Amino acid sequence: MKKKYDVIIVGAGPAGLSCAKELQKSDKSILLVEKNEEIGPKVCAGGLSTKVFLKDPSLEEKVAFTFSSIKLSLPGGKEKKVNHDKPFVSTISRKKLGEIMLDEIVSDKIDVVKGSLVEVNEEGFVKVNGEKVEYEYLVGADGSNSTVRKYLGLKTEKFVLAMQYKISKIHKELELVFDASVAGSHYGWVFPHEKFTLIGVCGSSDSLHPSKMKEALNSWMKRKGYSTENMEPEGAIINFDYRGFDFGNIYLVGDAAGFASGITGEGIYFGMISGREVAKKIMNSSYECKGIKRILKIKRVQEKTLSLAIFLKKISPSVLNLFFRFVGFCFGFKSFTRIAVRVFC
Image 1 (cartoon, one colour):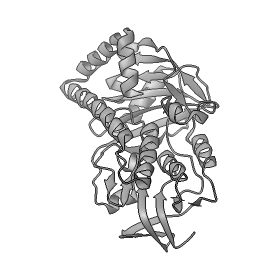
Image 2 (spheres, helix red, strand yellow):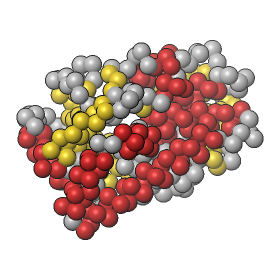
Image 3 (cartoon, one colour):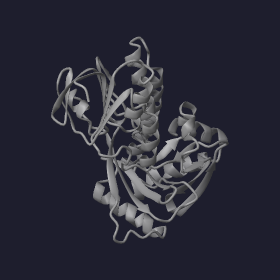
Image 4 (cartoon, helix red, strand yellow):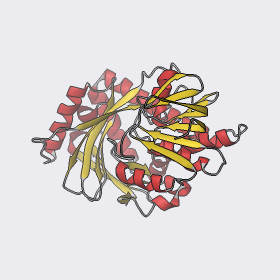
């Protein structure tokens, strides 16, 4: 590690790795710092939009499963199969995704430091495990509890809590659960992976208290025949409180910027796009970041839908369930399915 770099990226998740990969095209000196000893592993359901394949075709052959249909579990025990004319979602473990993306980093162009804490409390400098390092540009890709975001003085008031169990049984279908008694105004999931299945829910402070969320998840799993005996769920907080990404020579990407979806909690795709876009901005100050403008437009639509769901739940959970049943009915129309896939996947 040197004393000065053109760009320091804090965090080696999908956003930070995408930023580093794009910056390799420049002649800038780059330091990528990850607080964990291993790059990749994180509490995450591992849902990946197949839109990523358009930007990074190498990922297509490395995902666990790819789906062109999903099963919806609706209030009252009703189920509905939704089919799309092409694949729209895949699953991949965060460990594997991190390994794949790290392999694309050229070691002689980027210094990668793992197992190192970063302090940001002085303009133009960070401390990496207590050692002072100077930067021209700083990129905060350090997740929902971002140190760089805190340095910028940005609040985080909108967040999603995700909670899930890992079970050894491998499912063939991807399942989404829309039921106010299970996940409030949000949703639950059954995501198949190569050697396990992740079953969980997400919700905001407007949805369910964590203890109630765990109770609802356990109850739903029991009804479906899944045992949680001697198991504890893993959890994560996901920031979707977007308050900007460009702060002069400091940038925020991925969950650190609040680019995650407020309604689905999904952040991999938005993280990868924002990381790549910020890299282009650093390489060319006149770059307009059209990709970020596009994902912000999608976020606005998603969060208007979330606001509607929260409003309906406040009226009554049964009213929200009527809305979920109506949405399930609408998925019987191909045109609605295409629009929903484009906006939410």
